[in-house]
Length: 413
Image (cartoon, rainbow, N blue to C red; front, top):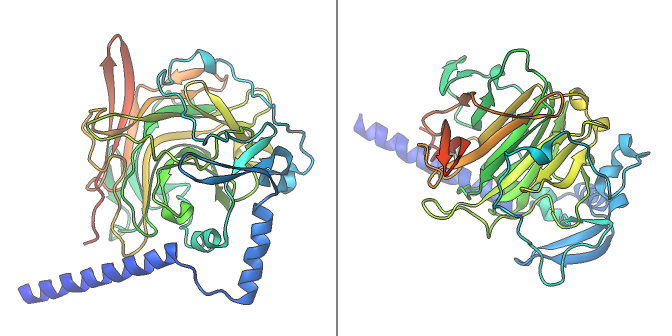
């Protein structure tokens, strides 16, 4: 019996090594392309890579094209052909400047080298390569719009609908706000989130995000470590939108209208990471609906820097308000690979120097007024790999709400 178990363990280890090797090659390597495939990739590159007014570099050496605002990929969307947008657009918010949910100490750092960022009237976009497109073919399908199709989850417990627990796919550790049942229309959400760099391999990824949703329409902003998407293991900003069967990250498909000259949508946080038990670094992230027009704006930093927006024209259910909001961590592991770490890579226990967190979580109501979150439902698909806690901590004369989340992941059995 012992020999059989030893044999099974060795076989599993061999299979894991093979999966890691194949996954690594799928992410890092270039596959041999047919002539037709190569032509299709070249066509897509011409669509994605717009003419650059100027090329600038970050302090870490990354190059970005400064693309004319009116020539950005967003306006290739058929519903935006006759737009009247311009670089100086400003949203209308009820009281976002007056709320107390943002950080007062985390100014957005300058990422540009001595030549500065992009000039006025342009936006910074990283040039896509053929290797990027080949690698991104291996990206998984989007996070399910409704996890209840697979599980019944409540308060860190899971009731399995099937006869087995799926050891691959998406796993979350998230907080969902609890309000009066009549409070069902959200016009935005915000948080300050700590920045970490959990270890991932191959097609794994690990992220923290705000997610707002109405039906099959989903908007997200957060940070993620995703070598398949980005080609490296840096902790980077990301946005994602999904409407019906269509979905994409950042500017890989038309839709999101970028307005800032100095903030790329795949901004690297490599020099601004938290050290567990040491310094804590965080970034303020918000998605808010313009009360005048109905576009959904992405805001960054304590001064609510307006990065860009998803036009309401390209959305379906989110032409109006959101019905669901959540904050927290999410990971993905493909078949054969273990579940990667999330957040700080440790289970949370309510310490903001040791745990990954979403701090000062808040929503805005139908009228655009910011509302604090004081009660949540905590959900996770695998409580043996990831945890989540909701705490109110007093710091000096102020009380802050925290969603602590994270975990080490777990190997396949």
